[in-house]
Length: 485
Ligand SMILES: [Zn+2]
Image (tube, rainbow, N blue to C red):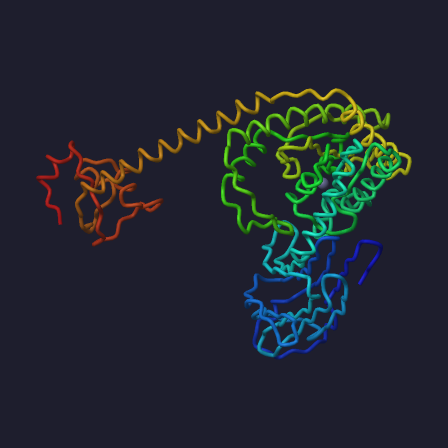
């Protein structure tokens, strides 16, 4: 278990004793291979890596106040292990294998902590995982929010600008790793350097979305900025491309498609969504007026675009040998804020030898950090034009129109199908019948029979099966001559 500063992570590799003998009947392939612990100031996570997709029992409480749940048909090589974590979120964790193939996970929590456990399906290089999410109680949360609000009011009254710096990735999600640079660690270091410049400037208050090695759900990152009523949000990343010649700094702001997707998502029910890599989304508040929401997005995009331009100018001239690859747009989830000008900076490509040299160089790091500080400062202290990204509103209206056209088309075809079903008669398939033969016999199109009978991709008919044959005006006369069975 490794603990340093605000970061508390423990990687407990469980692959031990190859000669470990076990004679139980459950699958030897189903193993818990690793157990990790991540902690942020607001929450903690216990992550269990598994070699299979498990079935688990519901969580139950024990008499001594601890909790447990069972993982079926699995094994845990050490047989039994207790982790005395003993911190603000968890007192202890015990993993115990039973001969029946059950692995019991029991944990004891301080009274103010709440838990939530869920399965994370395998994603890219990550295996199936069980996550136990531990969070502050609502009372502790409310207290913290209250303190935060007081601090925000104080800062606003003194005209201090709040800047949220978001070191990308973290914890379960390492980001791009290349040339000795692990993105999650690198961008955390860079974010701290950027913050240090703001800390020297009394007109600014810089806040990091994470201060250690833990994951924060993507949506939560922009939420932090919104809760703090920040003046600007910058997500910090480094890039990777298999094509090594691709290089340079990049600045992103929200794309049309990303913003429309967000508007769509926020009008739909988003309960229980899970991030693919780790963490959970909070549910979205339901949007009452979509048009107003789109306008808010368009207004914020207009500002974000000015922010991106200012940042690009500063980043592009930070280091002579590190060129700017320009301002780009993408539907990154961290850029979805509708009220805070938000950008994402890629400080260079770890896959490009020249870029990565500058990225690793201490002087290069200082220059890059200073230029991010300068980009924010130039944006917030310069003239910020109010306006609307009309291009986005047009795009959103086109998407809305296409959606309506599609819905109308679906409605018409549903009605057509219903009408055909109302006027259909049954036909029992005879030996040797094919779709084509039946269609020709009743003077209907093959596709009509497929559609009415919901045959999908099936084209062969089974002798004796009943087909519905729509009785349309043009085939009425012909079918009179055919015997319907
Ligand atoms: Zn990244």
